[in-house]
Length: 248
Ligand SMILES: [Zn+2]
Ligand SMILES: [Zn+2]
Image 1 (cartoon, rainbow, N blue to C red):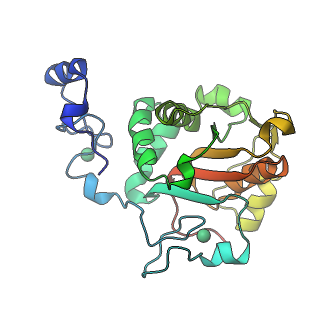
Image 2 (cartoon, helix red, strand yellow; image 1 turned 45 degrees about the horizontal axis):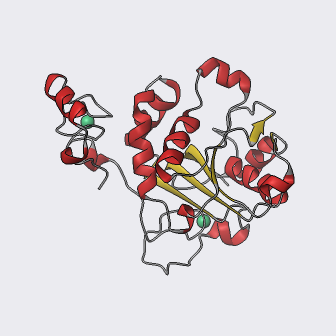
């Protein structure tokens, strides 16, 4: 499902593949197709699909109706309309995600963008612009790139919609969300973002927010909240991976 077909690759890439065989995105084993996983890594990934929460995309263990919501979304409906992710964030996908996030593995961006495009719902394709979740400028300076921005720019190009990274600004570098409870995470991100555009430019528009991992969804939810407050009609969220359960 997430593979490129050889026939789709340009001639120059095909010739390059003969000289430099493509490597698995995760373990560097030689693979037949560019930007794919090897036969050993492929089955280890847990790809997310229905049945899942109609809102946050949490996978359900039992068959459920398409409109069913998970307990968290029933308790407190997120500000975003829907969120989807490609992979479950687990032991196996962790190194792929972290290598991209902290390890300068920026060459992974086109493959990740391709995977994320394939899990978009129909509504997520009807958007006015794509916006990456921003990094605080200190973190951007340390890391030199916003991993979400790399993916978002490629997705925007392929979807032929504007890429608008400047809309959201991160004022506060929020401490790691790692071991915080849901409540703490919400407090942690409150007021961390604001909007650079005039409300008139945002009113009635539909945005797709892009990030690498969805954990509690507190960050995406806060960005969705301020965009909604500015008059945006709908906010969707797409991430490469998500955790199975959120900290409560
Ligand atoms: Zn591999
Ligand atoms: Zn949910």
